[in-house]
Each structure stands twice: as C-alpha cells, then as structure tokens.
Length: 257
Ligand SMILES: [Zn+2]
Image (cartoon, rainbow, N blue to C red; front, side, top):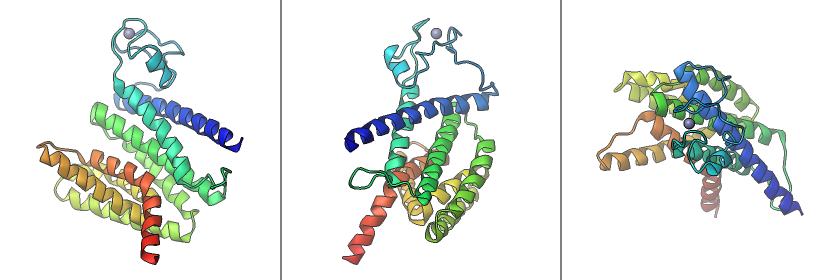
C-alpha cells in the first residue's frame, strides 16, 4: 500500500514538474521577447488561441501528435522534451534529497525541505536561462538577480557543513567564471548564474560539474564544433546535481573501507 502511494506521489510530482517546465519555457521565450507572460498561449503560425487540452504538459503534444490543432503546423519536439525534463528533474530532486526511507515512508526533516526547495529553484533557474539563451541568445539577468540571493539565504539553514560546502562551491564557480572572463569579457553576465549553481552543488558537486562540463567541451571540440559556456556549465551542473550526493557517499565508503 505504501509503495502504491509512493508511485502515485511520484507521478503527481512528475506532472507538477512538467507543468512548471511548460511555464518556464514561456517565461524564457517571452521575457527575452518582451511579451507579457499573462497573454494566453497561441500558435505562432496561425495565431489561434490554444485550447486547454493543447497546453496540457506532455499530453497536449502527444494528443495533437506534435501538430497545431488548427493549422497542423508541426510543433517542435523541444516543447515536449523540456516538459519531460521538468517532470524528471522534480522527481529526481525529491529522490536525491533523501525524502524516501528504505521502508518506503517519507522523511520530512526541515533541512531536507530546504535542500529540496534549493534543488527545485535551481532546476527552474536552469530551464529559464537555457531556454532564453537557446531561443534568443539573451541571458535573463533579472532572474539570476532574484535567484542567487534566495539560494544564498536558504543555504544558511542547511547546517554548518553544508553551508561551508556551498560557500566553497560558490567560490570555485566564481573563480572559474572570472578566469574565463579574462579570455571572454562577456561571460560577466553569467557570474550570478555560476554562483547560484555553486551554492546548490556544494564543493564536491561543483568540482564534478566542472569536470563533466570540461569533458563535454572536449568531446564537442573533437567534433570540431564550439559549445558556449552557459551550456557546458548547465549540462555539467545538472548531471552533478543528481549524482554527486550518491558519488560522495560511495567515495566516502571506499576510503573508509
Ligand atoms: Zn496553428
């Protein structure tokens, strides 16, 4: 019974994540375009206002088989992908923050709730920043201005060790950003974004994120292409975000044993 409840809860969380992702996608696109977020969603081709079923996350795309209900213009698969990413990232955040005990019951301690809020804020921030960068090559500085201080304040309540780790992570991310700025001055606009990622990842997570990002950079370079800083740091960070607590435990065990 407890397992069934947990599965329903995870599905529910997945749909919440997908709904938020759908909203962040709109924020990412419209803020950069200076269009009001309040306007109801419409088809960019025929301008028809979408029905509620069309804007339902994931299902809307699947029911319409990736086409506009009115004019049959194909709807890009990226909309479906970001909603799936949103759903998955919410579920993974919940699992990584250690909410589920081994006997399938919940563990809602207050530090875990703060960790989860920080995780959810960070994946939300990443979605908005990456979408606006991808769609318009515009950085949503205003959003990082809001998120970075909130994450910093929340990190104070995560316990002494975690807070220290957050400060070190932030320091390493800022250092990386500043060193890269020596080569490319425009990277200044990512300073607060990098700091936010470092706060949530902590020291170990930040190092892992940078290594993963650098690996990605090398692979892309081998294919004779270029990858922008914002993508490699975001991809490295998102993988690190969902793996570093497990890896950290594993390394601790290896060194103890
Ligand atoms: Zn249409």
